[in-house]
Amino acid sequence: MAQISVARALARLLENMGTEIMFGVNGHGNWALLDALVHETTIRGVAARAEDQAVQMADGYWRMRRGGPLPIVTTSVGPGNMNIVPAIATAFYESIGLVVLAGAGATHWFDRGGMEEAYRNGPEDWVAVLKPITKKSFLVTRPDTAIDMFLRAYHTALSGRPGPVVIQVPFDIQNTLISDVLPDPTPWMSWHPPAPDPAGVKDAIAIIAAAQRPMIVVGSGIHNARAWDELVAFAEATGIPVGTTATGKGAFPEKHRLSVGCIGRAGTGHGNGAARRSDVVIGIGTHFTDIDTGGWTLFDIPARTRLIHLDIDSTELGRAYPAAVALTADAKLGLTALTVAARASGVSERKDWLKEIGGERDTWLKSVEPQRKSDIAPLHYARICSDTADVVAEKNPQMPILFDTGHLLSFAPPFMTTSSRYIAHNGFFHRMGWSASAIIGASIAQGNGQALALIGDGSFIMGGTAVATAVEQDLPIVWVVFNNRSFQIERELMFRLYGREAMCDYRKKGSKELWNPDMCKWAEAMGAAAIHVEKAADYAPALRRALDARTPTVIDVDVSLDIEGYRSIWYPYPTDFNKTWTPGPLPAGSAAPPKK
Image 1 (cartoon, rainbow, N blue to C red):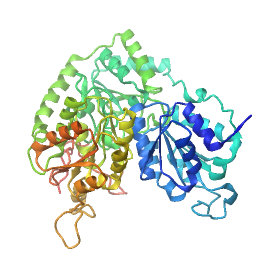
Image 2: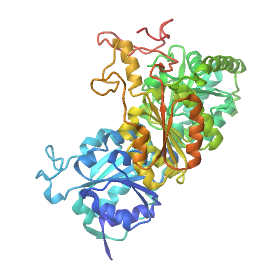
Image 3: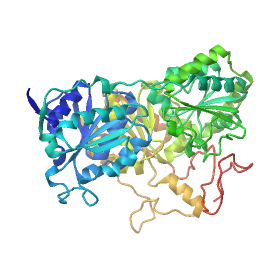
Image 4: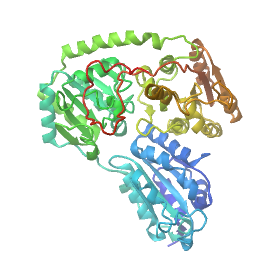
């Protein structure tokens, strides 16, 4: 029996598992892992410029595939490892499957306080930082059990509600020899998702059959289950309208007759109208966040509306609203069971309900037409989002689109109509700059294909160095930077609460003019092409040119600081600790924006 190092064993095993991609940053703690992965396998290695970007690249890759083989990330020790914390938190709360192989110093020196050891509360205790924000995080303690520990962790990341796992491997263990006879990884790469309880399905269908104004609300759970076709089948079998959350955007075709678009704080008028008037809501793969429900003011559950809630994670059932029927199930299997039962029960569409929603759709579309077609300069967010959707549908309808947080969250959900399911938004943890690097993983997952990121200037400054990696990898990615030299969404709401902003606007000392670095020069310095847009009529042609060029390109767009965020629901954040807060509909007349 021959021997092999733990690092080479892990690399060989990952290759046997069909691993396609590894994102990483070099540091002395992961040398053996990097040496084995880069030189001993055919796995594609992408050298990121920062550890958090490596995780976010893996995040974007997962969002395009939603299944194994998992993307792998490798990081070093100390601050290199610590840099992944916010990106890992994003992956955890947004159900992103990936594996991080992190380095550590030699076990011989543990608890001596050597360079970059997290030692004061225990020998090399860095993984303790990650336990609240991972599905599993641990330190490998023996070379002869390293492979078994890895396989169990891999299965954890992939099965059930997917999520990140972090495995820290000390440097001496990476280099220690073990048997080269490796286990068959197949059992650890597959799993059977849970189906819903038949009795619960029967109860759900009885409620749906009696409903007059039912509505389906879906989140990212549809994407993770790859239940797109099953969702369409259930909606068409029952004739029930479908609304998505911002993270569920693209899960249902937005041009389908049963689509009401996104709901929530920046939802469509007809989507939110349907939500308010619905008597039964079928929630699938969503936990009804404040963004999705207008601070829990959109639905009147359980008073006037009954909830049927289906999710693979039972801890999310009933988190925001009590459910009349709670089903722990995979979205694909759950929808299939509901569709079969609905057809058997003769559930059919409510024509009056759909006609009512259709009328409200026409009214809303007419009301927002001036925003979608606005010619103002600097540009209107709604115009950019609308034009982006049109150009993508024309040039490459299946192109991945990632949109960042900030003021974009007020405009992309309602105004950027999607032509494919390959759209993603970091819609729970809202980490600024996420899309700048996540789009690289999305492009790679689509065969190094065209991909588009919409991102604010503040987010781009935080994460835009990822452009250098895209240039190195020769990826046809376009970043559209919404440039207003301010944190606009924070600015707007601070003015409403306090009548002034604090640390939102950026200026050179002594100047009244807002200022940013020159985004085009920055992009060009990293090897990308750059286009500056000042007029609305120039944006769509600029996007077409950038896509046709098929080279990394940054489009720097001047956007108006005077445009208030689109809000379908205005709701107050609780500001008085002594006031009692309860969820429920807003009082009549309170849907208008609060006065400054």
